[in-house]
Length: 244
Image (tube, rainbow, N blue to C red; front, top):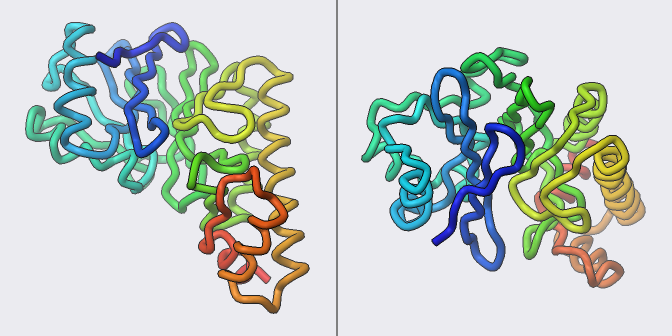
């Protein structure tokens, strides 16, 4: 049985199997009640992983104050329909409904973190200085999902926004290559953010060098030069070609 693991005071991570890796569901214990950040991929995830993990902490689905969705990708929001079968009245918060810097439930600050997608929503815990970034920080990517960016310039702005925020701790949703799913303290966080920019610069330089190639050709050539990186998505290449 998979359980919520403590990451900081009032913040717990549940690692839910997803393909050959995991996706994270976070439980945030707020003054106004428990909140979930993301809800995994499938109804099976809800029934066999999330609900038992909540029950172990003596939380019924109807006790949830809200579900906050980091963005509209299935490995983060795919379990929502099944969860709402158990808690039909639970509010759902997204980047479309939460204003930038809005404080939720007394302690959680909403942060818009576009780049990976336009609707990436991070949550900053004001009590512990912990920033939940979901997929907003990509590094090289993870497993077969390489660095996936819909808007590279927005991604740069997101990284710099996080740098200015200066959180004490960053908790991404997946174990991104090469720095994993946790960075704590100034040195680790600086390395993580600089790593994201370094990867972006390397990809952009390669795309610019081969700007007249088709996206498929660029991804294959990039993989040949970077055999130990997760596969660069064609969508990332196309987003950089569009930016030119």
